Length: 288
Image (tube, rainbow, N blue to C red; front, side, top):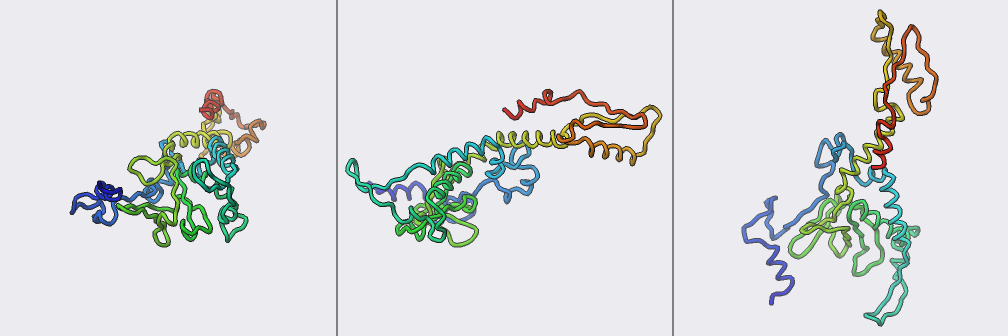
């Protein structure tokens, strides 16, 4: 019966002469998976966003939503505060032993970096990026310190029949002896964890857009609230119209001036639209 590695080689190595989409022989690298949809892949990313609502949805922007921030904070704080004990043995026969030095001081260069900080960063990275990467110093076989690499710093992961390598913008490729990769959910045939923020980009984009709209509604008026009507026969110049509009906006725009008393001269009058927050369903939009 062939060994496990022989089975892997037979499964992953296609017939001779077959080449990858990058025209690289499959004996070298057969899978490459990068970060996916980023601003580097789309020149219009910053202007039109990555959601139908036109919002840029990523870990940073999603944390602006109160519900997302509260959920992430709750899970990070709860999991990083769990007690951790170290045991040696097997089955029912085991004995508690002292924690290794790297658990007591994960980062020798920063004594203030604690175990709870390390675990909290792992959980945060998994919740917002779908995976976490721990750099082991010098490696997993002689561990003396650990640190969390931002998932965005791992530009791509490459795999051949025998080894996985992790690539950053600077420095040599890292191996599993130097990096511990923990995916949140690993889809079949993928090397990277499922990013929950990207997977929920449409729903989160709606939430971000509704927050932005509501803020602008109260701050400057996202809809036309009314108009200034001049008496018959009055023909103000464009400059006069602009001046009246600017003065009226300066004195009455925004929540802080919403109940200020207005005054118009020359027979002009303000005609409001019959439109209010209830009609706009702002609360229902925020609760959705």
